[in-house]
Length: 346
Image (cartoon, rainbow, N blue to C red; front, side, top):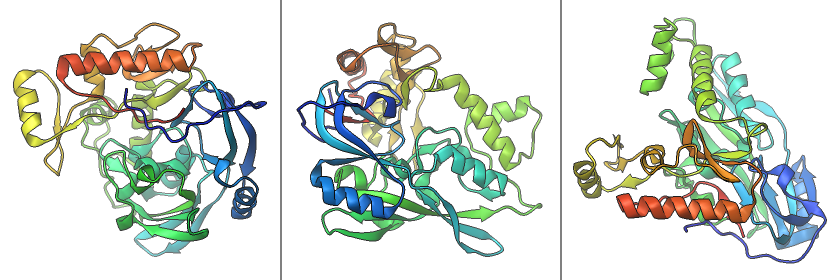
């Protein structure tokens, strides 16, 4: 089972981590502190050092059920502030504690184009550059200027420019050196829509079909956002009602040679050829074909979307058992090892 393991930690503690994670699975930690400004971060780092673990919205992090000898620094830094503006664009600095979808709603409401296709993605702003969050043909790297971070090695605040973030599919510099950088804000540049501007339509079949059903030929930013929210509601359960971490598995990306072989062997499989020539295979389709859509159990998969692992009252062991079962089944049938999206703290 391929897990992104960041720490090996033991001991006992009174503070439960479960309420802070959208999957509602996990053990305990020493203490939970809230970070509302950069000074709070410095104070906590001075107090707890390497045992301070930074947590955002909790939608992409899972903890095992043991006690973790950590203090959680829950990032709650607020603010959506204008840095620069001209007739065509606006540059915003956003605190990492802001809800990502709150930011998207703000942008659409003010006529700022560039992130409307990323509507209804759970979690906070701070997680978006770490994951290079993306959906419906858009990614955070498309609009990001820089990430403002605290470098725990150099003990200083600095800006990491877009070109230095090593962005890839659900990947970035930050995932390869976990824990070193604490994101405190991000800066984005968005396009200001004029009345005569035509809103770009995501070139995804589900979006275009839904707009067509509504009879919308020239959609506004709000039309795009509302359509994507409707689509996502059918595929992704509200974590407040059904605990989950969103899409749990990454879509496999195969080399051109491997992709051609795969399509020849499984001609009915959907696929997308990316700009870099890699073949992207929908992980959800792989799960459906191996019988994992609506899979039962204390931790199972969502009935409307096999890609979403849901918690029906299970624990970390139930989760890892299911994930291993899924990975082994798909490896055996398709010779593909699925990678998971969440960061798991053992």
